[in-house]
Image 1 (spheres, rainbow, N blue to C red):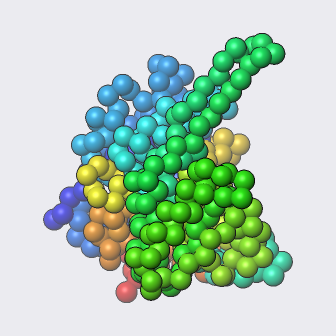
Image 2 (image 1 turned 135 degrees about the vertical axis):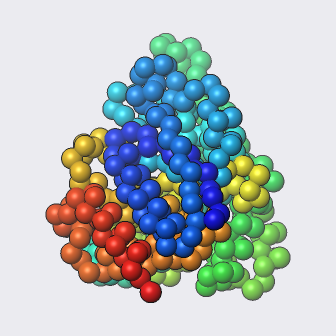
Length: 353
């Protein structure tokens, strides 16, 4: 029986609640499709920081390196500044394991109303460069606390990093509708984004079978709201991909539906899977968090690990539960609890033909 070693970092807020349901669903899929999983939980996050001054231990990366994949709940706590939580856990994992391809699908589900008055179906993927760009740790602050204080934040775009994320996006587009939009801002950012456009123009010549367009990020936000059904795969820098991959699932009805994968496509290092949503401290501990994004993220993990039948079954199970419109959490207009949704998805995973 194939066995996969999975590191689980529940994190903060609702992270533990939604991850628990994702683990239950994956376990059900493992029983049905004949694979086993070895789970190892790591209590890292804001509580660990408040107790030790670190979001994870000094040897955290080395510990995680021994696993096949990482399943993360959420990170963020009102008691800890957000830049501390990100820089102490998420960003080091993404960079140290070269998880340069952040894949964030967004799709409409039957049974879930869209906030758009004239709802159009959404079925797209944002491919976000995940290790450099605007989130590169380059910059600083000088003369702090004086009237001469200066803050700099330098975006780093390398040819290697830019080209490889674009090629990843082109290859993904080939498996879908063969349409790819490059998100830019070269009218205002004359160095980084003009460079981005130049690399995109070179790379697309190797993919004549994929239709392409280049869109300014502000225009892309407008078009996502006005005509989301015209997009398929979008490739964007770290910052622009982050913003667009929050907007897109919001159009489908809830961030609680949006999964993501931080991939090391070459599989030299473990990849990490997590819901797009945050830790939602305002509802933590109430048992009402939507676990769908975490469940779908776990499905993406199984697909990446080669358990494709199980991954497809989990996706179909989620589609079925949402389509019935009965077992829905409050963010979707229902009254079901977190474990109610987990129960419903598990039942479908066990019984779907």
